[in-house]
Length: 387
Image (cartoon, rainbow, N blue to C red; front, side, top):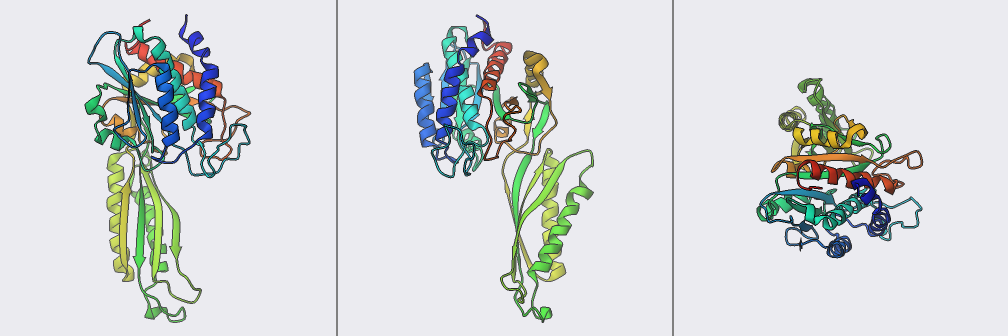
């Protein structure tokens, strides 16, 4: 039987898994119910082992090759949700108030379970071990890095990693990807400006944190525009500025919070250096104290060229080479250890116009079969699965 025909017979099971998981969204690493559901399905489908020792509520399942081997491939699905209310009105709406699978991780899990089911049913065709990583904390605080630090690549032989994300803004039924940098390195910053108060009518008696903060924000705008090659991409965005308490009192404190992103490690490090320079200059210029804290989050998602070429070949006319996106993904940390491929599966259509991170986000579950088929065909191309 052909691959697609076999996978299409999984549709009702894929739908059932997706809807069951959609009802129980959980945040960060606290994915207890989700992990329990995944474990039960792994046992039902017949995986060889399930490991829950690497990270809280993270699972590593393995399906072993028909003949013992030291070769292996890794597949990863994130499993956490977003802390937001749902407004879809569907019958399987979230049962957890203030939580929703608005980023499609329910679909990621359903597609991965579909892949697991297919592989278990065809384990006699496996020439390599397949390690399936169900990872919590992708949205925050990050689950990939601790899974690696706690021994993922020490315990399991993984020669390359494959991951997927659903999106609603590609043409219907398409698979999107690109070689090299596809998603950005990101971090968050917080400036704290400290002066001291005075009457608003006598500003010379104080040190105005608001004026200093405003100048600081304006100076941040030139870091990218005057230091990054116009043919490259980087962004510094101030999303929050808190200062002042009373209309006629000079503010003694201001907080500036934002995000920074780049497809280049060199540009990212340059931005950090320049931000510290701006902080020092503002402190001297306005005779205030300026503290800067930068938290580095995820690395650049950098797709292996050979794996991307294989993806384009197996997908054929449904492959779309996309432009890089400034969003971030902690799948990038796996790619720092082994060659990796991260691709997008289009799940939207005219009846489902809302995008990820929207409280109305919903999609066609039939398109999840495309992700299962893509995973299977990639493994076939890589020689992991032989018909």
